[in-house]
Length: 300
Ligand SMILES: NC(=O)c1ccc[n+]([C@@H]2O[C@H](COP(=O)([O-])OP(=O)(O)OC[C@H]3O[C@@H](n4cnc5c(N)ncnc54)[C@H](OP(=O)(O)O)[C@@H]3O)[C@@H](O)[C@H]2O)c1
Image 1 (cartoon, rainbow, N blue to C red):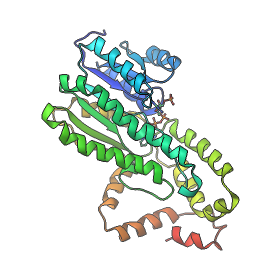
Image 2 (spheres, protein in one colour; image 1 turned 60 degrees about the vertical axis):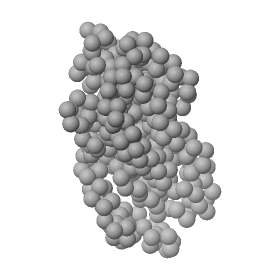
Image 3 (cartoon, rainbow, N blue to C red; image 1 turned 90 degrees about the vertical axis):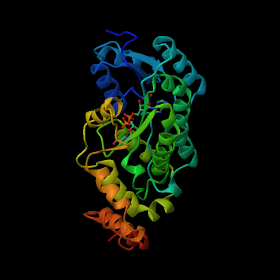
């Protein structure tokens, strides 16, 4: 089934979750998929699940030589033409700024921002040749920045900015650039986030943990077990539209969360802050820190 006439698409971060679902959905819909993974075993497992012979490529977006090799592999098998690049690889990071080691923030930016730029830059000659499309995976966090998520939100706001900038920059070459912003989606990201936060909080000084206890509690309730998580196929459906529609949308909002966030983001800042504060404090069961003055900042 795999041949050079099939439109070729590269997907970064295809080992699990949203990226894996996108890669398999594109494969099922007749694309020739180059699925970026960091471990050979993940690539083999993905290849076994694919219907039409998807091609795994080793691609760590923080490793320039790995990116270069991936581009060479794709170019050699597609006559130098790539119809789509899905920039999905990403990591999470949560917790109050004072508690989060700054090295974690740097690592996050290396993947979510610099890695995305580096992969896009390296694949651009192939994308230009095919008048292809770039689809970036953003987030609700790139529309509305909540407390306790400054690093992650900053990285996803950056992805929005990159999308806006490149949309116009690449227009003369017929390369469309869109962004898909999901709300909470079922994936490994949440379990990784819980484990990461546990390690960060265990290493944090007790006085800072006490100071930020109300926000940490709210973060646990809202961020670690979000209600109404959607399946990753909802994101894959929008990516498919972005890659195949004659008129792809500029931005795809997946689920009700990003739509609400978008409306909130347009409000005057003080009004928005008060609504976010109210949202965060709604139903807070844990009132153990009532005596702590910082709690007032996070209640309605
Ligand atoms: N899940 C959600 O609720 C949600 C909501 C909004 C946006 N998003 C975004 O969706 C994207 C996918 O996340 P997910 O939920 O599917 O999480 P996930 O299951 O943890 O998948 C993350 C993927 O990124 C890969 N990755 C991490 N670091 C990488 C690197 N340096 N180079 C290349 N690949 C790397 C991982 O590969 P390894 O397996 O090798 O680590 C994995 O394939 C991310 O950009 C995330 O920010 C997720």
